[in-house]
Amino acid sequence: MFKKWLVLFFLYIIIENINAQVIHINELDSLWHLKISATGFYSDGNAPKMVLTNKLRITKVNNAFGLISNFTYQYGTVSSANRIVYNDFRFENTFLLHPQKRFNPFLRTFEETNIIRKINFRNEIALGLISRIISKKEHAINLVLAGVNQQTNYNFNKFNLASFYGNDKINTWKGMAGVSGLNSIMKNKLRAEYRLYWMQAFDKPQNYAYLIDVSFEFILNKHIALQTNYVKTFEYLEPVGVLPYEVQLTYGLSITF
Image 1 (cartoon, rainbow, N blue to C red):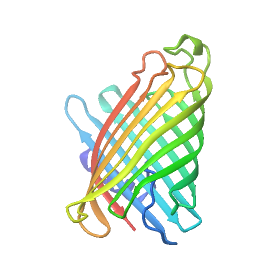
Image 2: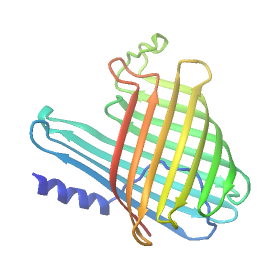
Image 3: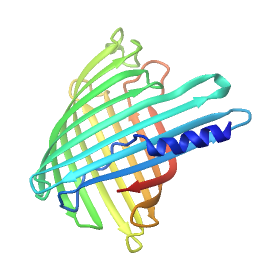
Image 4: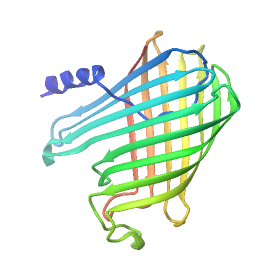
């Protein structure tokens, strides 16, 4: 069984993957950049389980525009319960105007599915502004403000907020504020990326969400790095019986081309 999942793990490294990462571009050139990372977890015994998380990021930037495209696929099973707990994707595209300037208008699209949170499909469109507080090759800090339209199709229609009872399709307008950054230390051998976002619905004060996403990379050479990633998501509006938060801590490799 272990050999089977080990083979699958390395196949997923080769096949597609990604995660919605920090919005910042520090080096201006006309090249395409590709970054692949994969992490896996397997256990056997009383509670056999397996989780694979695969990520791919593509970036391109010049003086006129920037593009960050991220895709994440996650698959996981719990053998003792004979069920699939993860078979989800997240796909994010961010388009920036004039990335070299201090203020950058941006358009962001985001799609996802999530079995645990009973989300059949979610689509977000955000329009906003990024302010570059610090922009250096080794250090960057950005502030982000945006308006977001979020449309979610659930496979459930009972929620912890009574006003949403009976609806399996929810269309919401939200405001978003956040900070993202990058820091390189130890002669650029250790790199930290992070983003902290808060989203608030305009019509329902209780309908809010936040994201904490922090990753560390220990760079082995120009193309390969060891990586650990901590992600916590919180969304107050949830189907009855679903916890409002999820936390994941993963380890693995990243490859940059």
